[in-house]
Image (cartoon, rainbow, N blue to C red; front, top):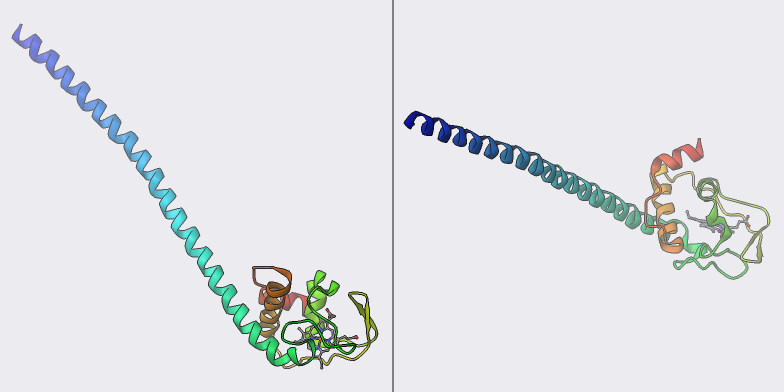
Length: 162
Ligand code: HEC
């Protein structure tokens, strides 16, 4: 009788222990899932802000380069100058980014039409600008006048100009 009770209670004790173990095991998978989710979101937001920092660097650099190299003709606000220099704001040319990149590098001549108006003055080439400079200027132009909040990477410029 005594033995039987001890035996039974031992059984119960073991059952209890087993269920605690099971619970712990399921908690472990539960917490490891949460842990993975936390790590993933930290990594994601770190990458996001790295992208954002890079965008801001390109944008600020691009603004300065634009003001030094382009604003004389196209004006600081990108609206162009009379019949001489076409606007960049609202220009059809912005639809083709690779064309814009090669115009910045190589200049342009011959008659063109921008927003229904004819222009025919040569734009000089900019051989002293590096690919990074051009990437930054392009980033600035597209952010400012095309609402594009991502960088034009230097690799894109390299691929376009080679
Ligand atoms: C000396 C004046 C001058 C400078 C400096 C200049 N451009 Fe131009 N740009 C022009 C002219 C003139 C045209 C039109 C060329 C033609 O008629 O073939 C033009 C055309 C363009 C076009 C295509 C047409 C349009 O308006 O969308 C883009 C884009 C452009 N320029 C961007 C730039 C950028 C960016 C810079 C600075 C890196 C720059 N230009 C510097 C005079 C200039």
